[in-house]
Length: 196
Image 1 (cartoon, rainbow, N blue to C red):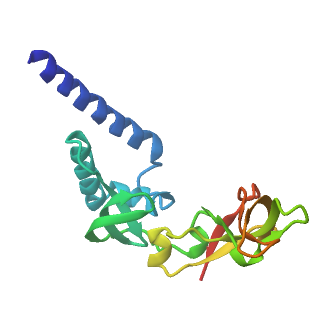
Image 2: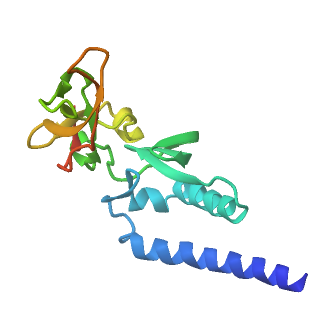
């Protein structure tokens, strides 16, 4: 019993130390309006609203529950549970009074795009065993919540938006055709930036 209690205390102390250390390392001087994390500035993170959300997340982590984290949409603060690229169970914390923190689309970090095969582009090669198919670079299916909030449009940023890849032909219903072309997506960088 004593060992279990001591282990729990040690775990709490270690987690607390981690949060304190990471905050001290990650954040610049108070009042800095440079964006640090999830669209938030250092001033927003250290604000009473931001601190309340971060402390709530720490308590939830210690209790092995899904943890809330701070999300800033311009000067609007929200406390949300992050699930992949989505934020759920958001609580509106109001606007943070401080330096202007409205996000522009140019402030958004580039996102990794998705190479999508075009089934209409499948061409069977002469050997009828191999084939080719065109892949197109597209935005990810789920855009970051900040991009949605400020109505940013995704722009594919790649030297060529389409790449033809070879693959293995899965025979179609007609002779010399392929119902699908089994291959790997291109290795070319496929990124998405944002604009109004």
